[in-house]
Length: 68
Image (cartoon, rainbow, N blue to C red; front, side, top):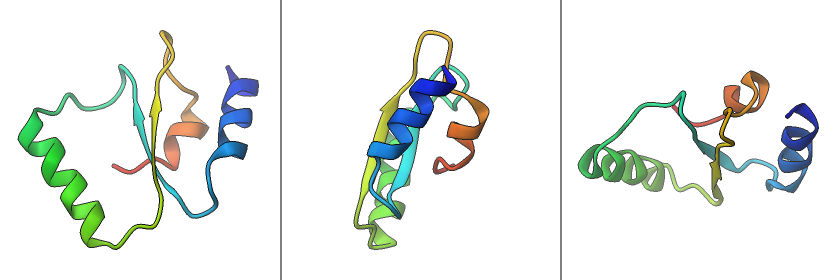
């Protein structure tokens, strides 16, 4: 899992904001998710990356840099 996280991290553009979708995250409905995306848009983000979790999740180090 750590090796895969390292490979993924290398493919993510420098400075990109990361949203990790796995079983450890918050379950958001459509409206709260849209509001969160709107807030990120308002920050004028250049790159936003969605990372879909593995069946056993992503490593803590990989998730720590994800957008809350």
